[in-house]
Image 1: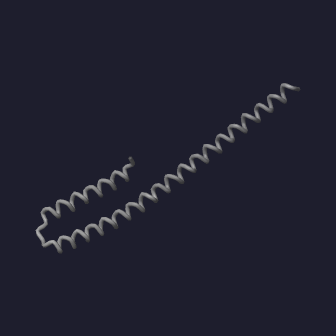
Image 2: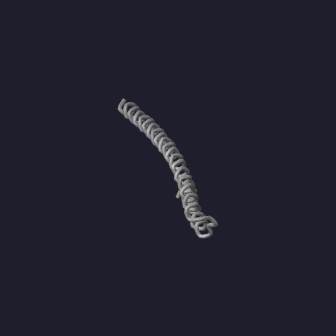
Image 3: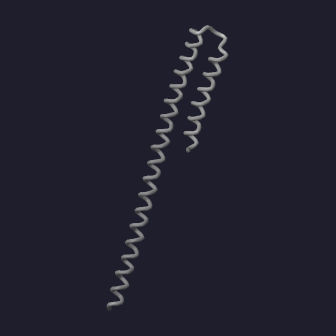
Length: 97
């Protein structure tokens, strides 16, 4: 599990525990408490959306990096194959003369 996913899961769990404890020990009337909970949930939603965007951006960057590495490896492999093929062809020509 990646570090970012662990952070998101921790934030969600901590928020849920915080809300539960807050409701259990609420010093205010029910309507005021519900309003506060609604506000906290809206904040959590915004934070979650922001973190989701960050995770998407990070995943996209990792994908691009992986594609570049694969392309580089493919290019190196093609060059090595062409070099070996050329040497074999040259050796055959030398041997046949």
